[in-house]
Amino acid sequence: MNLKGTHVISIRDFPKEDILEVLDCARSLEQNPQPNLMQGKIMSSLFFEPSTRTRMSFDSAMKKIGGRVIDFVDPKASSLAKGETLADTIRMVDGYSDVIVMRHPLDGAARLASEVSRVPIINGGDGTNQHPTQTFLDLYTISKCKGKLGELRIGFLGDLKYGRTVHSLADAMALFDAEMFFVSTDSLRMPDSNLKELSDAGVTYHETSEISEVIAHLDVLYVTRIQAERFSDPVEYEKVKGAYVVNLALLAEAKNDLKVMHPLPRVDEIDKEVDSSAHAVYFEQARNGIPIRQALLAMVTGAI
Ligand code: CP
Image 1: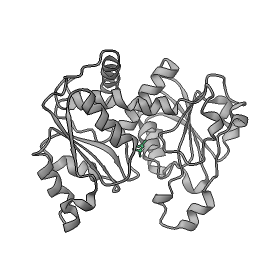
Image 2: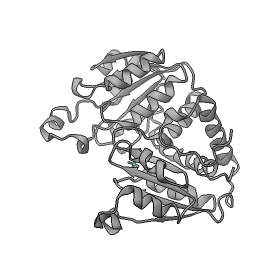
Image 3: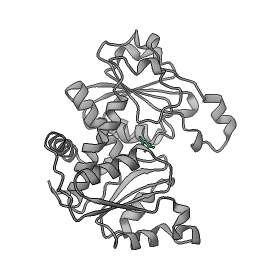
């Protein structure tokens, strides 16, 4: 497989074999660091929404393999503030760099950027749509902590309506014959369009509002924050805020080897008492962003 020149926009664009190859590449870079791999290459970092992990781990990943990073720090300090379009911005920035990583609040913004860019675009999250690099690192984490990706029972808890990490990971786990359990309030259910696609792909899934009904069945529990910033009506957010809290009492009903994941940041949906339990893998998950993003940067720029 050669991913040189490939845009990373949606996990759906990647067949299972390509996903496994990215994970293998990440594993190899983690075991055998290559500090000069990206020497002479520049990554542009365009974040139109807040980020800690995605922005900083891309930055760190690029620098650890010898590349350099440029960014505009704050979109308000760029010519976007003068009315320049995203497409024109990309048409400029692609001349300054070998690869562009971007996050944008609008669904489809990364796809639009890829249609005008002469260098690979890597989607660091577009609205409620997709977050493919998070999914690669989620898969990497699952394969490391469960020893396999296939035939797992995975629960998704929290904001399944707006959660792009959930949408991306469910798409990917469908390729690995996962059985899925969607746990949310009625207003934050997995969108029907996503459920239909999973159904069409032959996925067995279940929906409930009660985590206690399914916790004992799960191999992986993927918890998400209820995203206040996506609600147009704050009253609707207040109705669901704090709806779920994963704590040790709940986990007492789980399998001993259940792994609890979270893309982070968390607010209050995982009690801090869980952090030191053997179930918690969310900080390790965030650290796995480094080898995965190194692999993607190297592969799409043709360095590997
Ligand atoms: N998981 C994730 O996307 O975190 P950030 O929003 O901090 O990048």
